[in-house]
Length: 420
Picture 1 (cartoon, rainbow, N blue to C red):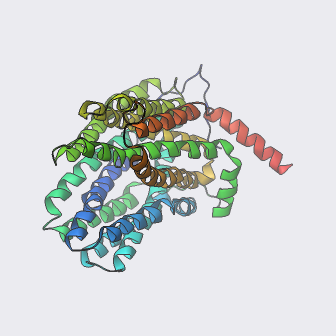
Picture 2: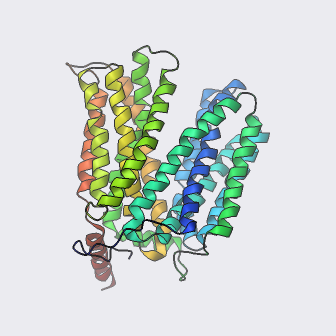
Picture 3: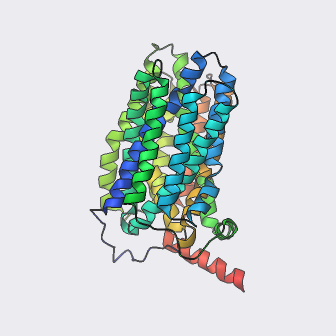
């Protein structure tokens, strides 16, 4: 079991400089998000302009999400049997093949095959990349490392759509080629730069990983509680645009809100990195995640009293800041709960939080805005009140999760009982 080896009165020193492969993983996160967001958010613009239906395009996105998030458990199990760098290469090449299919196929069922390849690639390199970073960085510095990686991801997320927007109308094939090359080159570079590391010299199986994780009740509670984060964050794309439409804004207002959200996440990342560096010894990952969810929840409350542009900005700001605080601690806590031989499998199972939470957030958020999007008994936005309550409840539950040391003891105790 990976567990903290230092006591509160004898804190381990926080590493201020990382090895070169760690910096490569930071750069990898930037380039992969750059390539991803150059194309994926703009697929609908391209295919709708070719006369395909919104239903077809929506199903295309659904295939991509389900094939990526739903298969990360298997991607994690594969990553626990092979070197991480090899799995990252395989995932990158498969995703590049998906980009190539988008470049040459204009319509028909083969587009679903492209979306499936795209998702399978992410299901492979996602858990492998997280596990590689966790294995390369001491536990005392993981919070800072994952925060930096999240910050570089946010920069790629911001720059990608800007580049894609300039090219999507007349140069769609060029976007596909460039984005595919980015993934292929990053995968090949990883084979040269990353060490030949894997979770354990002992061969593991998917079933052994599932059995191990099934005994870790704290981890399973954590995965369920963190679904609330993705459920609420998904409202950035469901509830907030719906509320904005009721205010009859200029056509560019939604894009400006999304730009503000991306800029805030980048701007807040550096102070959060500094805060993580100072307080990693004093604040546990569960409490940090709880703080992030609490900020997200409280930010919905102004909309409970009145709906206007100013109050709508509150959840945009709150979701941005809360996500920067909560997400890196999610990765840190996952690594702390995992045992060394199933590290990537743990990251794969942790992705179920996003698969379930984001799906429920998308469909449930749309349903809530349809049924509870209008004032009711003095509450300006009943749906916003519900979003606030769900987020605050999840914050409370996350903050009450035990420290990794406590968790390790609990899991070890469960294993001893199981072997009696």
